[in-house]
Image (cartoon, rainbow, N blue to C red; front, side, top):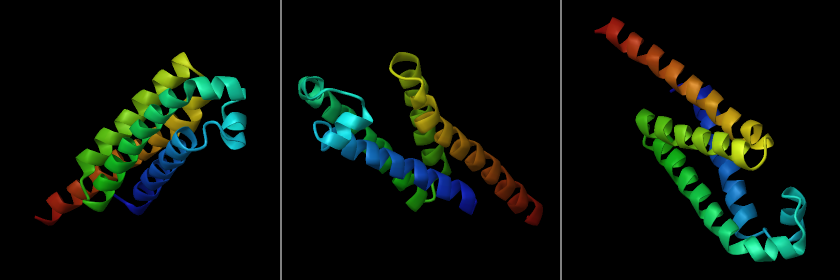
Length: 128
């Protein structure tokens, strides 16, 4: 993976870490209410579900960081793919902007990861 794909994957992980914080800890606070355009009543009624959703975002962060730190291309590809699927589903069922906030950065990172990995494999093969 090249540096740009790593940076973009790190950005996707950072976004999902922020989503975890918003959903698990700030859901009923003014920043959570404003971010998700909710009333305090709606937030209070859905706080447990939001915390669960935040936990899942944490798993995505853990997987992306694991893949980056262990230099496991397949792990990064898997977790970026999970982010894309979640983003497309969220856009289709909840809010269209999720497509651009969540799925698009992951798709760009995935594309760069696949392209940069192919180049490094070709380079290694040529050197053999």
